[in-house]
Image 1 (cartoon, rainbow, N blue to C red):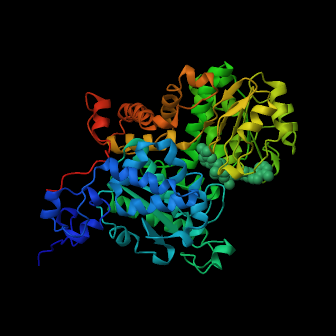
Image 2: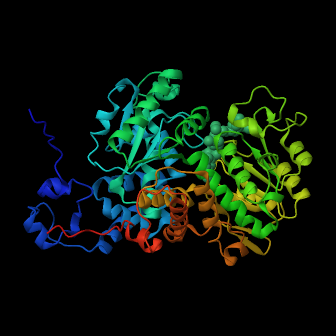
Image 3: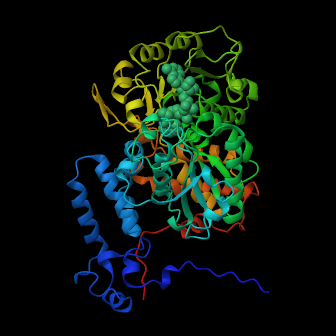
Length: 552
Ligand code: NAD
């Protein structure tokens, strides 16, 4: 007997009437033309008034303006995404600097904490460990057949907020919205996924509105086998897909990346994206402080996946400048709960070992600064206020222009505020933070604090990978991205202390970065398509435009 495959998913172009209005990618809401209303059975389902997109946006801005709480704005925008995807992206892309903090950090942190309470309509895919053996089948439930980008979390280390179980789904959803809004990756190719392996968060386990498995997290071989099943199922169902691992606990994030980075197209934004954005900030910061990367000494407060990832990529840049791997890593020192990482410590994980150099134990961060004389301190600890007055003053005593990067998110976990860094350094800090801070007036100067937001890196990386159908993601691609971000910081940005390009121009910035990364992908023979003659035009031709398509 001949086997036939019957595709039972209706194609969006076959939809009519009510179903179109409830298909977020097809819906134009009040902007359907008279001809479309007649042809698609929409007459009467909409009021007679036919609106332009501009009028629709005006209404949205007015409704948003009535909301005073950011979480309410998040909920409103999320509902808009469910209702009319084109309009959602049109709104986001009209002012990315305004909307990014609402659809992603910092607001998404609170949204995740309250996810089960604010849920309207589920988005994305939930893959539960209770469904082992069925993951490939579940992936096929997704309505799109050509997925190119998955952001996946297991919810164990959401931002700096810890284990939020399936509430972590807010992160893949928000992050993928930025792939589209900030670099033009078409949304139909993206898929948010949460792996539900339980949660150890007691508050969630006893919350009647919690939506995930009510069991402790599965660990060990069973967990590893589940990850393997997931990664292999993606290769099978979506063979052109890149997997971005997000907000896994560091003891999973690092081994997962090591295990899969040479086998499939994947990366970990907490490790590699963070590293690249920090490298970009340091490279631009060096234009203010003077000196080369290989002249610097870095001291990290926090030695988890972000800290070790940044230290490794900084080392790679120093290696490109001519240092040996050993010399480069020797310029990166890390400090965690138990003090300075040094070679006599017996409690370190494998991924921390390269940065455990011979040194006497030090358990006081100010003492470590005085002793190691870092030119830059980078906070990736989730410990609010760890960069106190004594820390900033110690940095300012030994550096004319101390580089101070409190990178922990969300804002409430930042190691210091911009105000504190400028005040305690007498206006000399070269500052960037993980969460946004408003401009700071100090003396006669107004400083504009840069946000070392991974958004400068991952959407552009996504666009480059999508456009070139890259087969692997390498560290060299991230260094290329970092340099491409830093070179877009202008002298007038630097004049106000800003060491990242303005977020208001993120799409332009991202396309430049995507082009540079795509060049690197072609040069490394990692592309799945033939190199076009004009790479920039090629990339621009693939950028998603939030415009309604004619349906008749
Ligand atoms: P992680 O849990 O892997 O690492 C945290 C590290 O901080 C651990 O080494 C821990 O020992 C250390 N630490 C905790 N408390 C400490 C204390 N009291 N004293 C000294 N060290 C302490 O987390 P991660 O993935 O490395 O992320 C850390 C932070 O960086 C998070 O807040 C995250 O939001 C932030 N981050 C920011 C960006 C960005 O802004 N671009 C990107 C990624 C991560």
